[in-house]
Length: 145
Image (cartoon, rainbow, N blue to C red; front, side, top):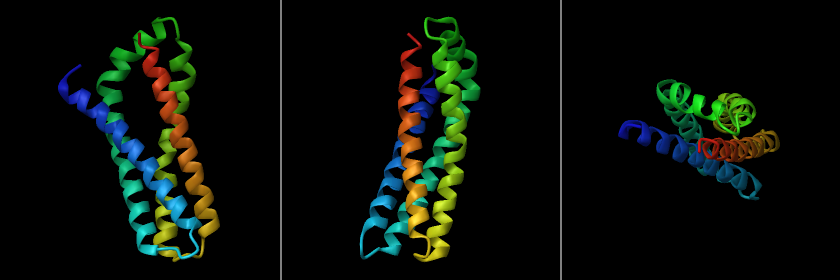
Protein backbone atom coordinates (compact mmCIF):
# COMPACT_ATOMS: atom_id res chain seq x y z
CA UNK A 1 0.00 0.00 0.00
CA UNK A 2 1.34 3.40 -0.94
CA UNK A 3 2.07 6.13 1.59
CA UNK A 4 -0.84 8.16 0.17
CA UNK A 5 -3.27 5.29 0.79
CA UNK A 6 -1.86 4.69 4.28
CA UNK A 7 -2.40 8.35 5.09
CA UNK A 8 -5.89 8.25 3.57
CA UNK A 9 -6.82 5.32 5.79
CA UNK A 10 -5.43 7.04 8.91
CA UNK A 11 -7.27 10.29 8.11
CA UNK A 12 -10.48 8.39 7.37
CA UNK A 13 -10.31 6.84 10.84
CA UNK A 14 -9.23 10.02 12.65
CA UNK A 15 -11.88 12.20 11.03
CA UNK A 16 -14.57 9.60 11.75
CA UNK A 17 -13.55 9.39 15.41
CA UNK A 18 -13.37 13.19 15.54
CA UNK A 19 -16.92 13.40 14.19
CA UNK A 20 -18.11 11.03 16.90
CA UNK A 21 -16.37 13.13 19.57
CA UNK A 22 -17.90 16.36 18.27
CA UNK A 23 -21.38 14.87 18.39
CA UNK A 24 -20.72 13.61 21.91
CA UNK A 25 -19.89 17.24 22.70
CA UNK A 26 -23.20 18.32 21.14
CA UNK A 27 -25.04 15.70 23.19
CA UNK A 28 -23.35 16.83 26.41
CA UNK A 29 -23.90 20.49 25.54
CA UNK A 30 -27.61 19.85 25.08
CA UNK A 31 -27.91 18.31 28.56
CA UNK A 32 -26.64 21.45 30.28
CA UNK A 33 -29.16 23.78 31.88
CA UNK A 34 -27.41 26.83 30.42
CA UNK A 35 -26.90 25.79 26.83
CA UNK A 36 -24.07 27.55 25.05
CA UNK A 37 -25.42 28.01 21.52
CA UNK A 38 -22.02 29.04 20.16
CA UNK A 39 -20.44 25.83 21.51
CA UNK A 40 -23.28 23.75 20.03
CA UNK A 41 -22.99 25.46 16.66
CA UNK A 42 -19.22 25.01 16.46
CA UNK A 43 -19.33 21.40 17.67
CA UNK A 44 -22.07 20.46 15.20
CA UNK A 45 -20.22 22.17 12.34
CA UNK A 46 -16.94 20.44 13.17
CA UNK A 47 -18.73 17.10 13.55
CA UNK A 48 -20.38 17.51 10.17
CA UNK A 49 -17.13 18.54 8.49
CA UNK A 50 -15.30 15.62 10.11
CA UNK A 51 -17.86 13.14 8.82
CA UNK A 52 -17.86 14.64 5.32
CA UNK A 53 -14.04 14.53 5.25
CA UNK A 54 -14.00 10.93 6.47
CA UNK A 55 -16.69 10.08 3.91
CA UNK A 56 -14.71 11.49 0.99
CA UNK A 57 -11.36 10.04 2.06
CA UNK A 58 -12.90 6.66 2.93
CA UNK A 59 -14.60 6.57 -0.46
CA UNK A 60 -11.31 7.30 -2.21
CA UNK A 61 -9.55 4.54 -0.22
CA UNK A 62 -12.35 2.07 -0.98
CA UNK A 63 -12.41 2.77 -4.73
CA UNK A 64 -8.65 2.90 -5.22
CA UNK A 65 -7.46 0.15 -2.88
CA UNK A 66 -9.92 -1.71 -0.64
CA UNK A 67 -12.30 -2.93 -3.32
CA UNK A 68 -9.61 -4.42 -5.55
CA UNK A 69 -6.99 -5.54 -3.00
CA UNK A 70 -8.38 -6.02 0.51
CA UNK A 71 -11.94 -7.16 -0.23
CA UNK A 72 -10.85 -10.24 -2.26
CA UNK A 73 -8.48 -11.27 0.56
CA UNK A 74 -11.27 -11.08 3.13
CA UNK A 75 -13.83 -12.82 0.92
CA UNK A 76 -11.33 -15.59 0.11
CA UNK A 77 -10.15 -16.00 3.70
CA UNK A 78 -11.45 -17.72 6.79
CA UNK A 79 -13.94 -14.94 7.60
CA UNK A 80 -15.77 -13.94 4.40
CA UNK A 81 -18.79 -12.97 6.52
CA UNK A 82 -16.68 -10.07 7.86
CA UNK A 83 -17.10 -8.34 4.55
CA UNK A 84 -20.50 -9.75 3.63
CA UNK A 85 -22.16 -8.64 6.87
CA UNK A 86 -20.00 -6.16 8.74
CA UNK A 87 -18.49 -4.15 5.90
CA UNK A 88 -21.76 -3.96 3.98
CA UNK A 89 -23.55 -2.79 7.15
CA UNK A 90 -20.75 -0.32 7.89
CA UNK A 91 -20.89 1.11 4.39
CA UNK A 92 -24.65 1.67 4.47
CA UNK A 93 -24.71 3.18 7.94
CA UNK A 94 -21.72 5.36 7.08
CA UNK A 95 -23.56 6.78 4.07
CA UNK A 96 -26.18 8.26 6.41
CA UNK A 97 -23.90 9.85 9.02
CA UNK A 98 -23.09 13.06 7.11
CA UNK A 99 -26.79 13.56 6.37
CA UNK A 100 -27.77 12.98 9.99
CA UNK A 101 -24.96 15.33 11.02
CA UNK A 102 -26.27 17.94 8.59
CA UNK A 103 -29.74 17.70 10.13
CA UNK A 104 -28.31 18.26 13.62
CA UNK A 105 -26.15 21.11 12.34
CA UNK A 106 -29.09 22.85 10.63
CA UNK A 107 -31.44 22.32 13.57
CA UNK A 108 -28.91 23.89 15.94
CA UNK A 109 -27.99 26.76 13.62
CA UNK A 110 -31.54 27.58 12.55
CA UNK A 111 -33.58 26.34 15.50
CA UNK A 112 -31.90 28.40 18.25
CA UNK A 113 -32.76 25.90 20.96
CA UNK A 114 -36.29 25.02 19.84
CA UNK A 115 -35.44 21.41 18.99
CA UNK A 116 -33.21 20.35 21.88
CA UNK A 117 -34.84 16.98 22.60
CA UNK A 118 -35.01 15.70 19.00
CA UNK A 119 -31.54 17.09 18.26
CA UNK A 120 -30.23 15.34 21.37
CA UNK A 121 -31.88 12.07 20.34
CA UNK A 122 -30.44 12.35 16.83
CA UNK A 123 -26.99 13.20 18.23
CA UNK A 124 -27.17 10.10 20.43
CA UNK A 125 -28.11 8.01 17.40
CA UNK A 126 -25.15 9.45 15.48
CA UNK A 127 -22.80 8.57 18.35
CA UNK A 128 -24.20 5.02 18.62
CA UNK A 129 -23.95 4.48 14.85
CA UNK A 130 -20.43 5.96 14.84
CA UNK A 131 -19.24 3.65 17.61
CA UNK A 132 -20.88 0.66 15.93
CA UNK A 133 -19.19 1.27 12.57
CA UNK A 134 -15.87 1.85 14.34
CA UNK A 135 -16.07 -1.63 15.85
CA UNK A 136 -17.25 -3.09 12.53
CA UNK A 137 -14.22 -1.54 10.82
CA UNK A 138 -11.93 -3.03 13.45
CA UNK A 139 -13.46 -6.48 12.96
CA UNK A 140 -13.16 -6.25 9.17
CA UNK A 141 -9.53 -5.15 9.46
CA UNK A 142 -8.84 -8.15 11.67
CA UNK A 143 -10.30 -10.47 9.03
CA UNK A 144 -7.59 -9.52 6.53
CA UNK A 145 -5.01 -11.76 8.22
